[in-house]
Length: 118
Image (cartoon, rainbow, N blue to C red; front, side, top):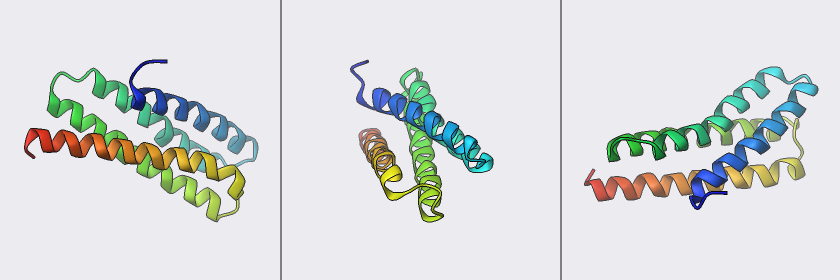
């Protein structure tokens, strides 16, 4: 593991999303699985791009995209829960993790914008 909390958390979250999506595909929920896989793994990919950004503006832009992807992932997880595809016990842990990512990323973007005077 790295010393970067958001990098580690987004990577571990992506691994959980992959496992969930494999189960969804086995359960014949192909479209929902595809949408969740795309948004859930995109969070970490955008964090990685942000960390390699060539400017503060580039960093904040990629972190904001990661935040939006985390919010989209929350949407798909809520749909899976509310449509009874996932039980509450199945959804609680991963949804909690997803909410935590949104909060961390929102804080990173807000702090970055304040420091940049935006």
